[in-house]
Image 1 (cartoon, rainbow, N blue to C red):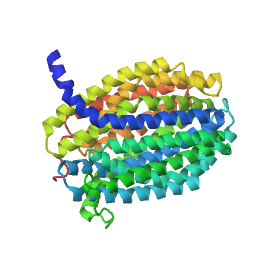
Image 2 (cartoon, rainbow, N blue to C red):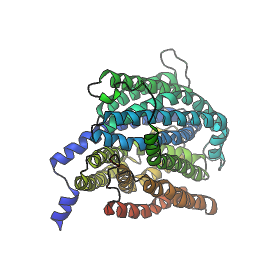
Image 3 (cartoon, rainbow, N blue to C red):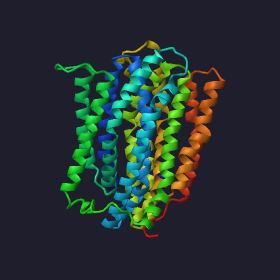
Image 4 (cartoon, one colour):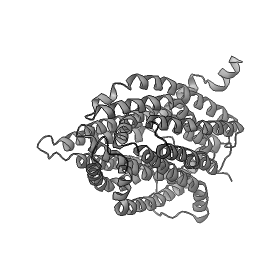
Length: 464
C-alpha cells in the first residue's frame, strides 16, 4: 500500500528538479514582488489607518482588472504551451496577436469603469460601521491613489502579454529578473516619495502610486527589450509586429476556449471583491485588519501559486506532445507536492501571526483582528493549494467551461451567499464568517478531486 502511494504521489530527484526548475523562478519573482508589496504596505500603514484602508480598497478593485487580463490571455496561453510543445512558431505568433487585442480591449474597458465609477466603487466598502477610522478620509485617499495608478495600466498590459508568452514557452528566468528589478525600483521610490526623502516632497499614498507606476514601466522595458534582442531563443518574435491580424478560424478557436477563462477570472475576482465588501459591513477596522493579513498571506502563498503555474506549463506541454499517461502521473505528483509544501508553509505562517501586525501604525483592535485573519488563512492554505492545482490541471487540457463552473460559479453560488447572509443576518464575529466561507470550499475540493481523477482534462487541443 505504501509503495503504491509512494509511486503515485512521490517523484524521484529528476522529477523534482524538473518541477522546481519551472516553479522556483516564478516563486522567486512572485515572492520578491509580494515581499516588496509587503514593505510598500507597511510604509503606507505607517502613515495611518485611513490611508492604508483607502489603498487596500483600490488595490482590491484593481485586482479585478488584473485577473481579467490574466483570464483574457490564459485561453490563448493554453494554445501557446501546446504550440511550443509542437515547435510551431507561427501558432505562437497568432496567440501573441490575440493576446494583444484582448489585453487592449480589457485595459480600455477598465479605464472607462475606473474613471467613471471609481468613487462609487470605493464608497461601497465604506458603508459599514465607522469603528476603526474615518470613512471620508479613506475615500479621499483612495481616490488620489486610484487616479495615479491608472497611468500604469498600459505597462501592466504589455508585461502580461510578453511574460505569459515567455513562461508558456518555458522561459521563466527573464520574467523573474525583470520582476525583481521592478520591485526594487518600486521599493526605492516608495521610500523617497511616501516620506519625502533627499529633498523630495512627502506625497504619502500618491507617492506609493507613482512608485508602482514607474516600476511597471521599468519591468515592461526590460522584458520587451530582452525578448526582441534574443531572437535565437525566442524565434516566435521574428516579424511579430509585421501584422497584428489573427486568422478568423484561430481567433474563434482561442475565444471559445478563452472566453470562459476571462469570464471566470472577472467573476471570481469580483466575487473576492464582494466578499471583502461583505466583511467590511463589520467596520472599517475589518478592511485594515484583512489588508494586513492579506499582505503577509501573499508572501507565503507564492509556493502554491508557482506550483499551479508549473502545472499549467508542464502538463500543457506534455498534453501538446501527446504524452497522456506521463501527464497524469506528473500531475498527481505536483498536486501532492504542492499540498505538502503548504502544510509546512502554513505552520511557519501561524508562528509569525502574532508578530507581524505589530509593525503597523494602527489600533490594537485592528492588530488583534489581523492576527486572527492570518491564523485562519494559514489553516486553510493546504486546502487552497489543492484547489489551485486542480484548477490549473483542468485548464491545461482546455476544459475551460469546467473551470468556469468549478471556480467563479461556485464563488457566486456558494461563497458570496454564505458571506452575504452571515454578515447581514447574524451578529457573529467577522472571523467566524471568514472561516465558514473557507469551510464551504470543501465542496469544491471534492469536485476537483473527482474531475482530476476521472481525467476529463487529458486532451490535446492543438491537433484538433
